[in-house]
Image (tube, rainbow over all chains, first blue to last red; front, side, top):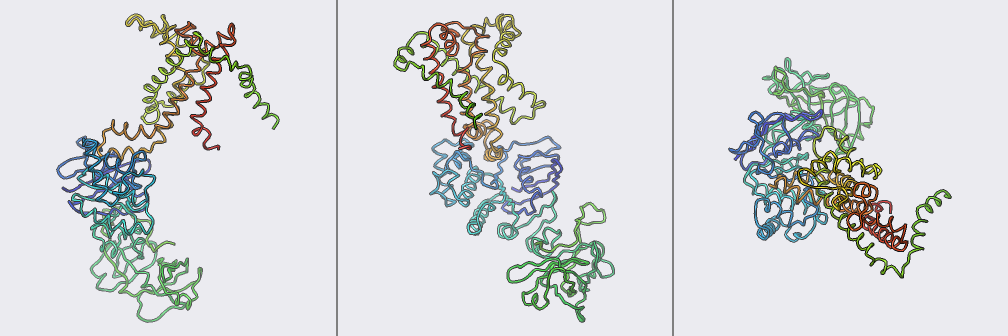
Length: 375
Length: 252
């Protein structure tokens, strides 16, 4: 049973146009910045958000089809939804929260409580059955919320930032357990997150939603290697350039040119993207001679420490983020406002076709051509 | 500072006067008098009925005001809270014109069902509900607004029908507002004077409620008037006590 979603939602100034297919037993992570429409998309699938147009199909069952006037009520969709902060009913104990789902399915009270206890045990929070939600820790509440959703025996599972409310220590442990429970669930699963690590640990496939549109849909490795948007590039810490290839060079939108290894760029013509790892950017006080094919003057715009390295933000044509060692920083006496030379080897520039920017121009252009990790 | 003291005195002095004149020792005897007992029984019955009616009618109304897509919602709300600012006597007169024997609806009620509301205990209930229900509606509407709709969404995704959602999620969510609104509504109904006397008259044992009996007794039987007043003061204090967390919790 797969989940097949294609929705358009318009709401005061915000538009969502997204398609999503999740196979049986597959976990898809939905990534995106705040306000991209991730929660709205889940709401549309669960029947909580009115669609302007589109359809939601779960297996053979049409849940929404605006063209045919079909809109199955949320309570008849068999779509489990774990909300961002759990949303346990505050006036019911953990046990009764889980039993609520069973009672709604017509299970008698005593039997519902017996089975609810079983679900809590299974999720490792059996000892907290009598506690009110207010007395539960973030991790416990999340487990109870998952138990409650699973107890309703849904055919598909939606989780909205299931770990966002947890502190760092609880998050690591809960993430592993959540991964186990997700794998144990047979139907399609969608996990909303804005943490790329979480997305890669929980899901087989990543879908990136930006400004209400899907900008990436594919395996995790593909996403990190060849990002297609400024947001994803920032997420994985790469410099991303959008431009067009002409006679073996990438002309960057907004100024500048990049040269890539002939083998990589030779087959490309037209709109293209290029990435440069910040570690591959070398800085020099004077214009360097020798092998690097890309050398251009830049001005230091900002510095910040990133682990045991220093990230240097550089303004120029194009902008670039370099990652250097503290030793190099001291040797260069880099400080904001200083003019230096950036150098990148042609083999460190990865150029690939920009499929979204097809000649028909249907996809929206990103206004920024460069993205490093912002401070 | 001095002005504040005057203000405080203005509010507190009448109460002190009342308590100072209270015939504490004779109180049990006074409270046993038929005048007092009749008024007490009638008032309890009608005010509780008015509160019940306000809950049954007021909760759906509050829900509509808080949740429904309603054109002219502000106008509807203004009409609903009008009795809170309307002089009760005017309210009573308006009820008479609407529900009296010759009234717009009263005529029809009389002809088809033989129901005559004015000058009956049922009329007392109607007058009290008219005046007191807005207090409940305002409180419950605020309650509905405060309930996070996402809890209702969560319940729906768990398979709860709209009625189950309302009964098991929304209603518990508004319970504190409903309780406070009902207590306030009941206190207002119990103290209702103007609309009652205008619409339902002042018939001993039928429509003479506690406030009416107090007013009546003041002319002839001061002891009974004092006893009745003390009952109403006691109720008011109890209401204050019951709602103290809600009203004074934040201010300390």
